[in-house]
Length: 94
Image (cartoon, rainbow, N blue to C red):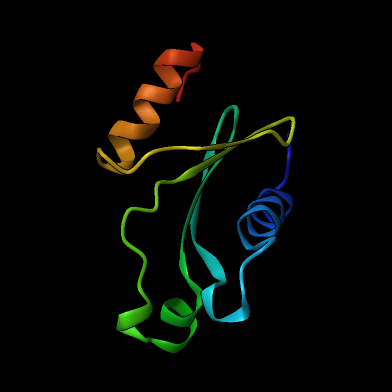
């Protein structure tokens, strides 16, 4: 199983790869699952500095499987519904 720290590092690396410093993201919360991690994130300027104008909208959660594979989920539904749909599609138990 991948560690929380490693899952978060992978997501940050992926999302911040080409982002300018002013548009970097930071981890909001990590939720353990039997198959990996659900990683929630937002703008670093919002999470670390409280800048409301920097807050992201339309950012769906990331799923990091135990293998380190990252899946960016949508934001059309709630986080719970997006994750449930992903789990159902993949035959995973949450």
